[in-house]
Length: 257
Image (cartoon, rainbow, N blue to C red; front, side):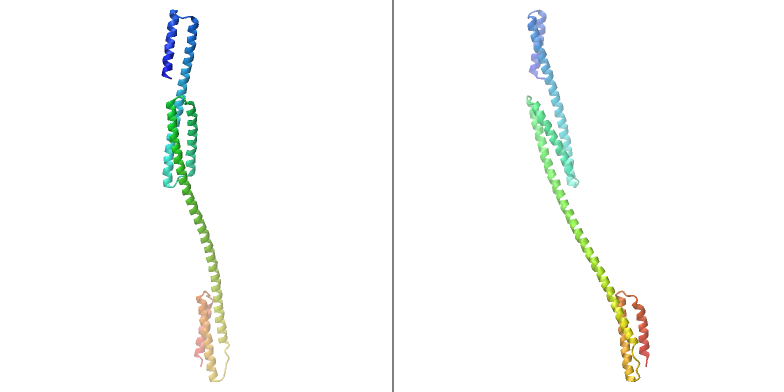
């Protein structure tokens, strides 16, 4: 309630009441003064109600700004810990926009009150600063998320490369294994061929020829044993039995006269 209006209101009421009861003014003047009194009273009550509403709205905005300060501090802390999310910043940003809209409305209805007007300007400055701070934090979060995304893409790409290389290595190992098995088989077969050549050595009557045939047979069996051994080393276990049998044949041949 404005002080000047209150003073005028009560002086007017006192004057009207006093004059009327002592019969100093006509009834028409008294009614006119009472009407003016009623108008001033209603105006003062309306003004007081407006001030109460403005004060309530201002207090609510202060409470909201206080809450935003706490949320902003939490967001900054989360960013330092690496747990901040862009949605946090966007929620705070939305609250700030709502506060600025309330301040704009309050500034219009408080245009006649310089005190409230200055307070609105001050709170708008606070909200602008908070909005700028949130933009900075959003940028930091976006930069962090971009780096994480790039790292994830790099890891995914490297994983794909490693997987491809593993498949290639596996394929090569399989081919190598097949090649080794084939080689072992060929070595075994060579041992069989030499053994059969030794087995098929001809019988001769002349001593000199028998010695040559004997040496040739021994050579065939020795080569057979050599190839069987190579076959065993490369993973052909069937050659083990042939080695034993061929060695027996070799010993028998060497003992012949």
